Length: 313
Image 1: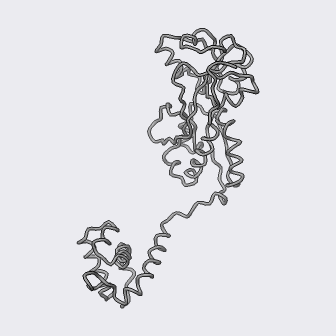
Image 2: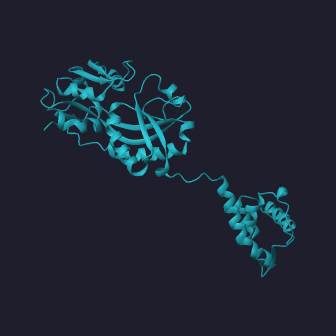
Image 3: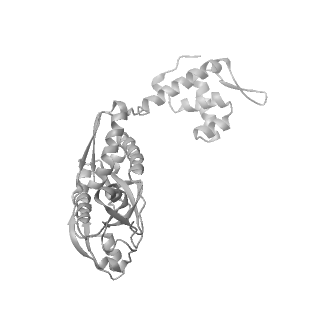
């Protein structure tokens, strides 16, 4: 076998050579590497010329390797795998990561997830730190500038071009009030929403609410007695008054016993799908891809909704 000029070698021939030596069939080797049968025949002709050896010869109705090809086959397989390794991203080892991941979230998500995430990272990726910040009108600008890696949202949130959304968990919304509330011992209708003052959570202070849109379609207008950007402040106020609120069942259920709250099924669709939003650039980051997988696992457990009693105990 003669000396080969590596500078002039077409590396595209290596996958073809490996497949030919392993398959010993031009048609099957061509299909494996995505070439046509004529293109593979031409590749074999070039390889024979490069190595100065027939490589594969007809025998018994098929092709058999020459002695030179027999010796060449294992070397080609090793060389091709080594070559692939040059272009293959190294396996990510969470235990060796040193990184700060920044999330924009409401206090509900922070309360439900931060303890679980910190405990998980301490076990699996102790070099990873988390920074939670609030969601505001400038959230998209912060994400585009790299100040936020992941933002929590719901599936119903309109998303601008250039972002991707991952499903995290399915929650439900619950109608929440204090135990002993005058309307706690019966099922609610849409019309009941006009009879009591409500507490709402608003990140942007614009008064826009999916619930109010639903009520408006039914001709019902509710009175808002309290608006705050904090879920914790909302349930605390509801626990001490006749205010009612309609929020995440998973979050309200976390404090139902300690604040003596009643959770009821609202008189409309109560599905609340939680998502994680990233820019396309951030979504391609291998570290954030790993973290989003971990986030999905912990979210599924954190948002496991409690039983919602239709009638208070």
